Image 1: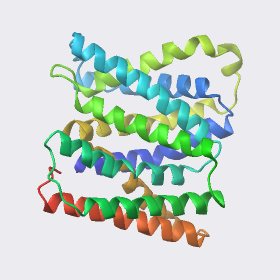
Image 2: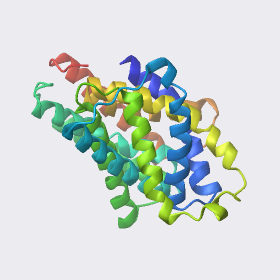
Image 3: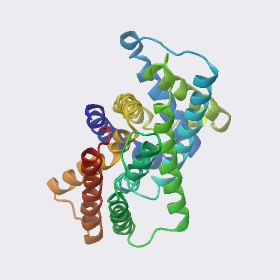
Length: 281
């Protein structure tokens, strides 16, 4: 659980940076992926003297690496498009749906025990997320936005699944650097480097990748232990953002307020029940 909590604070510090790069710098999905991948790889490389390089090039590790690169690109593309239409707050609510999804995955692989209460908890969670989306969007979300949200959810879940499946002989920082380098290289044909590097604010955007690099690393540690621990990061971030809004006395509509509380209650319920029924947290 320590890695999940650490990831929450790292990502909370960098979440506004994602919005800044996508919306304020007016980056396309290709530019967003290129800049985030490049700057994150640079900051992750600073950890190599402490953690060392360890990546065993085998058929299994190669397949996982290719999958991670593809999933990270999908995550970057969908987040770049979504953050121009929805808030970082709403995205955290959507990603809470990965909690029951991760439980069912752990159940299939024998890392959790079945309990019937997971079904009503999941239904309550869906209601909570829907209310947050309605509160943030001022009504029902369009089909295109909902599709992108589910694509984003799938990419995040499968990324954690692949991290969990990394074979022995690979450490997280080495894998993450290779993933980011792969992402950057695949974006180069679609980015006008001359025009891109003339954008103002790139340095500020790059600095937001420092906590992001830390979050990627602790997130990888959490994913290697349990998919549920990995999935709990996002609703924990939602709770942190919610508390920040309350302390700052931000105006919170009824849908957003009730939806957030319902979502967090459902996530807490699942977590407690998983622990009670023998899940491995």
